[in-house]
Every structure is written in structure tokens, then in C-alpha cells.
Length: 479
Image (cartoon, rainbow, N blue to C red; front, side, top):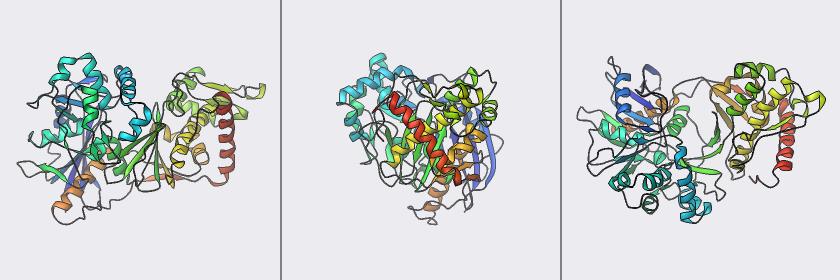
């Protein structure tokens, strides 16, 4: 069919990949940082356009027929009635909105009410919570706010020349806190609850639909959030789970229906294909490893991994509950970490290093059990993040998770997913592709790890972790 481009506007940079529409092969790439210092919580969206223009320089988009846009999630762009930004975009996990999140939970009648309404409980990062913060702290800006967009919505709208029609996709909409993944509809009453008045919301279009065509004839697809684009770029399907190792951790699966979880542990998102992405988050992942490395006087995580490999599974009975920043799964916001099993023979640096890796992975395995307990199929687990390359992670993850573990080679999966979406929309517009079936691009190259004979050992380690957790926090975790 031709060539398409996918761009990913992350919190810090823009990456663009140009791909063959039939195979998904990356033909050329572009990159540019955002022209802002650090990671402030208020960003002028024009910075995203400047970065996009720089990344696309040098004729990168020559011959491209369609573009897909992926962008950072949890970025709220409030516009006035004329389409101008009311204030800089509110981006990221803005801690300023934590009180607002608690206010919203109470205002609707509790966590269960929110789970039933939109499939998630308000969190500081979500758009609905930022609207509440805006209403409480910047009432004049809140009153001027007439239109609500997210980062990828705003970029698509700009690429199309700011038309009267504004669009989004179901994936991005599902992260706002005022769109229901179960019903596929906006909840304008929740916007009013948060902001104090109604606002115009973009039209939610289907996964293979085009948002529009530029005057030059360039097709722009629906766009989506980074998480949904990365899942599409990886080629995830039913039975696939992504475990993401950042400072905090997340476990996300592909599922055929939206999950409403009254406990609030599951955030029910929609994906970029028509399926769903239930997500369970832990507050402590790599931050627990970094804390252990600092305690042991080690310079980096590679050194911590090397030390951990000198120990054996179970760390000679040493168990670390890595709840260093409180925890969300289980819901223990004010707790601290616990180190158990201290004996003379276990009080060695290598055993503490091993316990840190096992504790982090057991915490993520608990999150995985939440999804399993709701009937989510777990066939293979994609392990993402720089820490996924560490030998101590790869040695323990398959047996602790009880499933095949796939470690994809590093790539710009969000940008690739955006390009795949563009190829789909282009193919549908040309009558060459079914609107229900995305193009069959080659999956990500990856290293595959099997649980093998170590499965029983891993399950014994998990049982030990569970015993300490239940003794320390009885009844706190019910997957």
C-alpha cells in the first residue's frame, strides 16, 4: 500500500518512525527532545508541536500517506470557546491533585460508585481529578474552560488545521475518569461534578477510523495514548500480559470485556483495537531495587543484580515486602516496607539483594493474581523496562509469575503502534483492509524465558512472601 508514519509525543521527547504499510518494517526514524527543562507539571502544548517539527525535519515524512499519533497519557489540555489554551496543559502524575482525588471519591459516594461508573477510582494523574483541582485552585481558568482535550487529541486537531470537529479514540478516553469503558460513553455529569459546569468533549471514533485528512491529502488516524499504542506496537492479543518495571510497576492484560472492580485495584482501560486493557498498579518496583542498592553502597542496578545472583532462590529465608512508598496493591497507602527472616546465615549482602528482586517480583505477581482472579487469561508475560534486562530479574520472573516471560528487544513500540494504526486507517479508506482487523505486522523480536523445572521453587518463594505479607498485614490483600 505504501508508507505511513507513527509519532510518539512522550513527556520528554518526540519520536517518529516511518514504516512499510504491509510489513511494519521501520524505514527511517526521527527524534527531538521537547524544548522544556526537567519534567514540570504545567507544559505549553506548543512545545509538543515544536518538538514534532524538529523530529520530522530533513524530509523524514516524504512520501508518507498517513500519520498516527501517540502521546503521553494523563495530559489535560483545557481550551476556551475559541479553541485557545486556557492555561498550560496539566501533565503527568500531578501530586497537587491528590486531595482533589479524595474529594471526588467522596462526592460520588465512594470507590465502588466510581468503579461502577467508569471502571476506575480517581487518581491524581487522571483528567477528572485535574479538573477538580482546577476548579478549587484556579476558579477563573476553570470557568473559562469550554473544551477538554488530551495530548494526542490536541496534536491530531493541530495537524488537521484545528477543524470544528474534534476527535479522540476509546483508548485515550478511557483514561480520563469521565468515560465508561463498559458502556463506551462519556459521563458529562462527572465532568460537571469535577469542573463545576459542562464542557465540550471530543467525538470518540473507532480504532480504524480516520480523524480527518489534511488539505495536502495526508490521512490522520484516530490517535491514542502511549500505553495503548505500545500494546498495539507489540502486537499483544488475548492471553498476553505486560508487566512494566518503572519506579512503580504495572500489570496490564488484553481482555475481551471491561472489568468493573469495586475494590479499585483494577483500572479498566480500552485499547486501540476494540478490546480492553485492565491494569493493576503497584507503587513499588524499581524504586525498591534502587533503595536496596543505595543501602548496600552499590553504584547501580547492574551491580545489585550481580550480587543477587550470588544468592539462591528464597534468599536463605530473607523476605522483603517492598512497600517503601506505601502500596496500592494491596491498598496500604500509609505502610512501610518489611524485612523478615533475619537469621545469622541470611544476614549477608547477596541475600538482601536477592530478596529485593524477589520482593519486587512477588509484589507484581500479587497484581497479576488480581487479574487472574477476575478470569483474565495469562498465557505469556511481556516484561518491559530497563530492569527487564537484568539477569536477576530474568532468573526469577518466569517461576514467580508461573508463565512464559517475553523480553522484547528495545524499540519505539508506541510510535510503531501509532504507525500501525495509521496503516489500518489508510487501508480501510482504500478498501484494502477490514475495519475489524488490523494489519498483520510482524511481532516484536524478543527473548523468551520459560518457567521450566524452577516453577516449584518459584512458587515456594511466593508462598513465603505471602506468609510474611499475611502475618504483617492480615486480610489486606484479597485478589
